[in-house]
Image 1 (cartoon, rainbow, N blue to C red):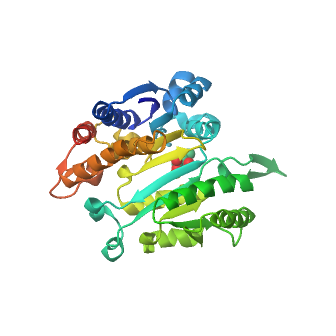
Image 2 (tube, rainbow, N blue to C red):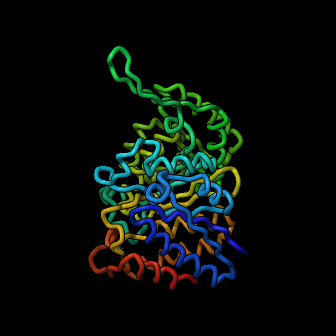
Image 3 (spheres, helix red, strand yellow):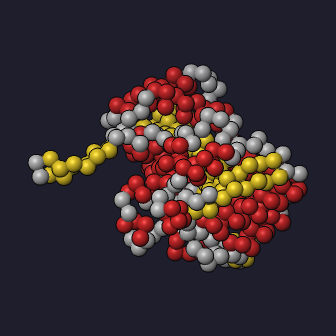
Length: 361
Ligand code: IPM
Ligand code: MG
């Protein structure tokens, strides 16, 4: 089949890691008889430099015209880059938020998996990490505090800033449905995370999630308060299958979960709407300090490309082939610097991409 993919190389290490993902996809195309049709667009700092804004309407149109979007990373050093002297709505991150909204990408899937070969990188005590873990954070991505009304005003000479956390039941229901559907294909457990002991939005969240749960009797639902969840992630991560949560909590918990794996350079993500369309990107950032040095880890982006094949194109066999190649590369002892350990062979970004492409079978 022909796969129409819009790529956003972005900033920092973004262009390098996207190039490696394309290498692997091209190998898939060759091996399994597909055609990859790529269009690159600018977003984030790269777009600011050329167009003065982090995302243009043309770029959004190009993304919409594709079947899926594969992204590297955006943003720069917030203390040094001139991009961060711009007003907030013109900084690189505003481009990412705008594309999520424009494409209605309300469901953000962030798997956090402890690979056997990388267990040593896990910062938890061995008695905890030896159980392993494989969880998926399902984060609501187009509502809540990120998109509520906000303002900064001065009242009686005192500066005041307001951000609004609002959810309606439809927004909660559609993300809950995604969470339960995915749980059915996994270990059939949903942990819905909220702050229902304080927030109205969380109390509505809890009641809508319970309504949805009634439609999925084969899936076990539990509720957990977000502060407790932050603790449980380091105390007993093996208890989690699908964590279902709102935008801001998901932002924070997904960073925590990725840190607990000890190898954020390995973690993929998908942002989906209610069709097959999705935007796929690594969970890590643009790492401007190592950009252009050919030392970044491309595996998270390569695994994001695998998620793209699975969710947007229903190419499970091809996605499996990529995931197998990643396991093989690790088993054979190849490591980029971020996941390097004694006795392994250190390789750069481009060499890692070559090996992954070579191991596609
Ligand atoms: C993420 C990032 C973004 C977010 C930033 C860059 C706006 O932290 O994708 O988790 O907060 O959603
Ligand atoms: Mg984040």
